Length: 216
Length: 272
Image (cartoon, rainbow over the protein chains, first blue to last red):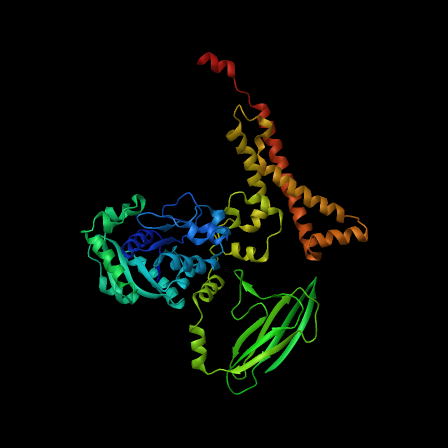
């Protein structure tokens, strides 16, 4: 199973949710944000190297509480990356390690489209603010064109009860509310997924609910 | 199926254009292959071949009466006919849809690279890119960076924008590296040297083309990829001249200022 975690805008918490959902699925998370990587990186080869044909995908895997295929931080690396290699790279990780969660970049350029094309299903992350929804709808259209079935959407960092039903209707998938919780925000930097750091929290329950929507 | 074609020569390449028309009463899938003795270079967008193309030819579905035009290049001598219909088969619309959905993730990924905007950071944003300005931009790259509207004008970057940047380096680098270990002479840094070397190589080439005999001209023209390359070289050398003058003026102005500035070290020591 290859799950793309996408969202129209940057800064809505795609990376954080990708990491935490990967933890709940016991999956590998691949940082496909070629230009602005967010997941912690390591010393070895990264996704830039893999997409440049300089490393095997499984070599780039960095074990941790959640296994990560990190992405390089340089613009030169992003320029040298060949996105047409992503499908094979992600498939190789899936063969070896099972479920893969791909953290997509924002926008609707090729770097956002290719992970959706590669994925079997996708999860949309939306900010509860109204203006963010338009971008999410456009990304949803892109996912539809590229054959990535939408399994659900996460309304992220919610402080007041959002209009869940209209959002779900607009995106055509059940919406799950992830409340704002500093432990979620810290989870990537500290590498402590919220499902283990605070398993009783509402946020952890929401992450588990999202993970349950992902088919086997 | 009706098929007609034309072949143009451009340097070592044959440019083959052909039109195919479905004269039948049902939609048909047609496979057309190159007969040229050389690798086929299909039309590409974003570095990815257009849909239907592979190393030997193109496959397309045509409705009744529909006419479609194709073209490709090949590094080979032209033959007549340059293309042939390898296969024609009727398709029902259902079967066609099944064929479309059977396209795997790789095909979809290729389609995404081809049809969506380029994701590559512009060359000018990549560190150390100045050195690579030495070769004229490939067509694909020019298109890719053309879409990056926030760049202050790619064309500009080729002209005095670069000169500004190089000049800026000359200005900045001494501050950064004028430590006791690094004598001022080497402070200009490798970037400027590399740029000078690239410019010098281009000018040498241009000089060899100036008033040269036929044999020498042929060698150089081959080196720069034909007449188009020579034209591009001419433009670049003209741009180089402009840039070099800008650098010279700025360097002279800076040298004057450097001479005039005087740090009253003794007075500072007295104050300390």
